[in-house]
Amino acid sequence: MKLIVPALAAALLVPAVAVAQGPRSPMERFALFTSCGPVNVEVFVTNSGGAGGITRESVEGMTTSRLREARIYAPTDQPAWSLLRVTVFIGTQGVTANTAQTVYIIRLRFMKLVYDQLSDPQLAANPGRLSSDSLGAALQWIHWAPTWESPRPGIGFYGGRRDDVITGTIGTMLDEFVTEYLRVNGESCP
Image 1 (cartoon, rainbow, N blue to C red):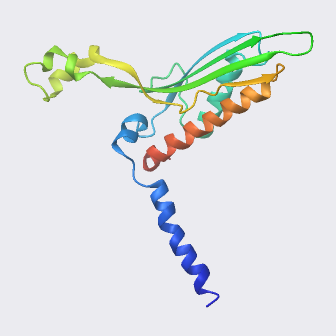
Image 2 (image 1 turned 90 degrees about the vertical axis):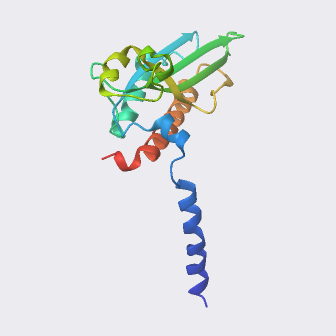
Image 3 (image 1 turned 180 degrees about the horizontal axis):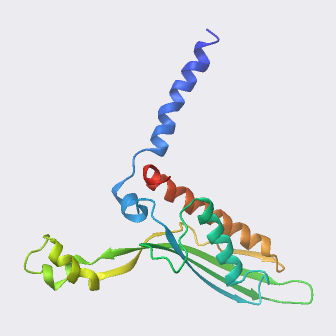
C-alpha cells in the first residue's frame, strides 16, 4: 500500500505536466514559431538620470548573452526573419541630496517578417492563390510586425539609483521570452 500511493500520485501528476506544456496553439505558433531560426536584437535605452549602469550597450550585452546561451542569437550583420526589440525607459523624479525616485518601463517585443497578402495587387485577381511567380512580386509586401510582447511592462518605483532592480527585471523578462520561444520551437531547436 505504501508503494501504491506514491505511484498513483506520480501518475496523476504526469497528465498535468503534459497539459501544461501541451501542444502549441495556432496563436502561439504564429507569434513565436520560426523553425528555431536565429533572432536579431535591437535595443533602445532612454536613461534620464536614473541608474547609471543601464546603457544601450549593457542591455544589448545582456540580451545577446541570453540568446547566445539558447543558441538563437543572430548578429545584426546576419539576416534573420525575426527580431527581439528591447526598449528600456528610466526616469528619475524627486531627487534630493540622499534619495531619488526612479521609474522604469521595460518592453520586449518579438517581431517577424510577415506577408501582407491582402495588400498585394498581384493577388487581387486571385485571392488566396500564391504561386512562385507572385512570390517575387510579393517581396514589397513583406514587413516587420510585432507578434509577441512581454505580458507586463515592468514598471516600478524605488528609492535610489540601483541598477540591480532594473537589470534583474530585464533578466527575468529575457528568461521568460527564451523559455516561451524554445517551448514553441522545441522540436526544431538543436
